[in-house]
Each structure stands twice: as C-alpha cells, then as structure tokens.
Amino acid sequence: MRAGIDLGGTKIEGIVLDTAGTEIARRRIAAPRGDYRATISAIHGLIADLEADSGAISLVGVGIPGTISPATGLVKNANSTWLIGHPFDKDLETVLGRPVRLANDANCFALSEAADGAAAGAASVFGVILGTGTGGGLVLDGKPLTGINAIAGEWGHNPLPWPTDEDTPGVQCYCGLTGCIETYLSGPGLARDHRAATGEDLSPPEIAARAANGNAAAETTMARYEGRLARALASVINIVDPEVIVLGGGLSNLDRLYHNVPGQLDRWVFSDTVATRLVQNRHGDASGVRGAAWLWTMKSDTAP
Image 1 (cartoon, rainbow, N blue to C red):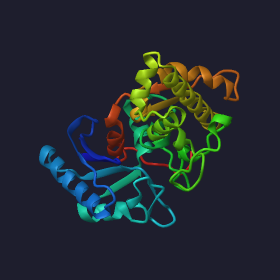
Image 2 (cartoon, rainbow, N blue to C red):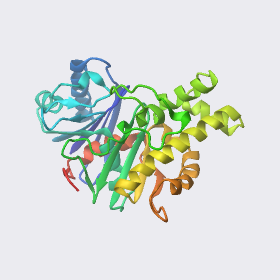
Image 3 (cartoon, rainbow, N blue to C red):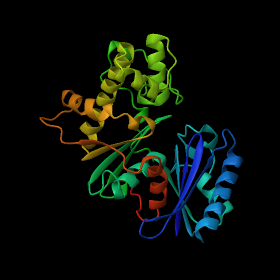
Image 4 (cartoon, one colour):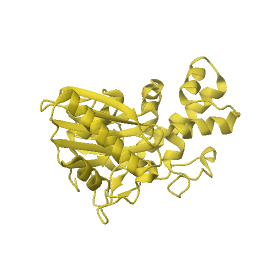
C-alpha cells in the first residue's frame, strides 16, 4: 500500500490508499511551525500511526508548499520557510526507511482532481489553491508537469495582470517582489484588501457572508476579488488553454466564484469563446493528500 502526506501550514494530513485508490486509513495532526527537525519527526510519527491502522506501507508521497530545486536538491519557494535549504525528501527517506516521492502541494491537488475528481477525464487541468497562499499545478494527459526549473504552475508569483488603479502599487510578497497574485487572491490577501478599504478586520467567509446579506462594502470587496481572479485565470488560459480549472483551498468554498468569475473571462482571454470550465474540487481538504499518494502511480514529466 502507499501513503500520501500533505504538509500544510497548520496541519499535516496522512492517508493510505490501496492499489484501486480506496482509502484505507486517514489521520491529521498539528504541524510544527518554524522547526525543521520537528516537522521530520511529526511525519515519522504520522506514518507509524497510519501503519498501525492499515498495515505495512511501502511507498510514501509527500506534498509540500514548495518544491525541490533540480540544481541543488534542496527545498526552495516554500512559504513554510523553515523547509528552505534542506534536502527534505532525502531526510524523510532516511528517517522513514523507504522511498519518498515529493511534489508541490498544488501539483498534488491538481493530480488528485484530474485522476478521479472534478476534472476526471480532462486532458489538461490547471489546479488552483486559494488559501493561506496561492498556488497552481498543471496536469497534462494524466501527468503532473514539473518543468525544467520545477516551477511549472507557480501562478501565484506572477504579477496581477491588467492592473487597475485599485490594484496599485500593491503590497510586498514574502518572495521579495511586489504585486504578486498571491498577495491579492490568498485568504490573507482578501482580508487585507477589505481591511484597507473599510477598516474592518474580517475573515474571507465573514466578508462573503456580509456580502450575501446585502452589505455594500463587503459586496464591493468580493466583486473586486472576483475581477482580479478572472484576470489572473485568463492569463493562464491564454498560455495553457486548459480544459478545466479546478479551485481548491478555503476560498474555493465560496459558491459565488463559480457564478461570477466565468462571465468575466471573455474580456481578457484572447479567443472568440472561452470553453474552459471553472469547477470546485470534488475531494475537498483530502484532495492534496490523495494526490500525494497518487504520485506513486503517475510519473512526473519535465516537459509537456
């Protein structure tokens, strides 16, 4: 059997799947923050607990909010910054005593939804994470695209396209640049935008709920967010032209996105029609961890 591990900012989730993709066991624990060795130890303990629940696990796939640099073999581009500069996959293999396959968490999400989720059967899928951060993953013909630099799909660290006066000058991203898509479309980005406009310190679900109840300021914030999301997704469609875009992360639970964003794509996509479908994920919070387990059945390519 194979296990998947999804390393998030606040939790670590593990799952065991049989060869047919049926879930055998699942557990979730709190994620250590700021401590690399504690993170390794927590995953070691989680795998031991999953084995106690399900029996022997031969293969482990891990999704992280970053990637392994092909040049150095070390983690880069991780918003869980304590992972950066470490050979995370090799250290896990040493501790676990078995092979580990590691991928970006957005790639794992996209792979899960392409395999047996909301985009099953589609030849090209772009999976979007709208949560604490903003990421993306590409799956082409059932295979996750990693890219020669291991950054394929890193949509969140492109600048917001076609910026308006409301979008400028933007705020600084943790990556060091200003105006990244992540700073606008992540959960903290949405909350920050509303706070800047109104002085109200609300969570994204609270903002959306107020908008649904007729609050004009909250509605304006949500409309601004949807316009930015449409522009950002249009830039992906113009380059990749995927059949399906699947949304994941906490903000993907906002139903209004699926009603209000597709109709805005026409303005920005360089085509007479836009057939790309925008859909909510099928597997919810489990999609990333399922995709990590699927890493052992679908090999990654470095080029389309």
